[in-house]
Length: 328
Image 1 (tube, helix red, strand yellow):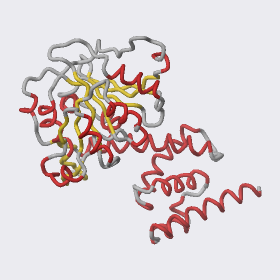
Image 2 (image 1 turned 180 degrees about the horizontal axis):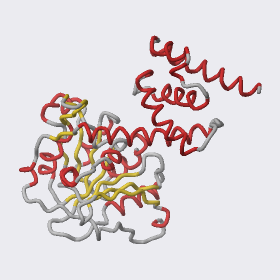
Image 3 (image 1 turned 60 degrees about the vertical axis):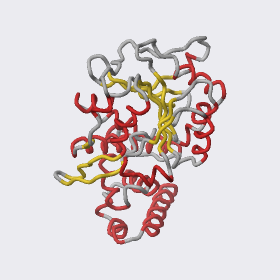
């Protein structure tokens, strides 16, 4: 990120309305992704606390999750903005102090997740991860969940993961619903006093925020929405990459994307949900072949193979399909 863009981000992050109590700008900074953050926080002289749930006391000692009250003219603010591609920080604006925010939002780092109907598990929840935050916000489908997540914040914001000149922001509007947008910052570059529009933002005003700290639950229906959003975004990226790599699919693109979402769910059962490269190869192969993969000998081989063998099978099959098309 250029110094000019860092400067623009800082001007926007700190251009907040005059309110009582005063709105302050915070960052949640993940030291897991950047060990140098520990030293930089210590020498920044900025007020900060650890945000991990108390059950993660070992993480607090080894890999703190920092909640930092930022200052505009501080080298630490410049540093974390410059590292946006490493996904180390998410930002928000709030009228509350560090301890109240810590008490409330640390509860979101360890949630009760309903993996299946009536099957619950306590899991770490990375709501603070720039890769997770937009999907979580988008998945908030009812007023109670919106109020819960925005109780302490006026606005969540961060540089877009893929396009540093685009600002992602999310807030609860005065009607109680979520608005989340990506804003191209190019028009702001030459403005002497750029600012964000807070006119329709519902500013939090709950007294004694920490008194409302509670165990956070993610119900099965909520999880399904998050997974659906995640699959849709994966497929969008898949088609962008497939076009760059020259793959051509028969049929309408919209229909192929719908098909790809179903194929992605199938692929996770065969190659695992964490192997993005093999998920990509599986879906590409399925879109290039007329016969469903489930009806091919490849499917059973993939089921029985280990991870290294799955990768080799998918690469070999994809190469074979492309070689055949080149000969036609």
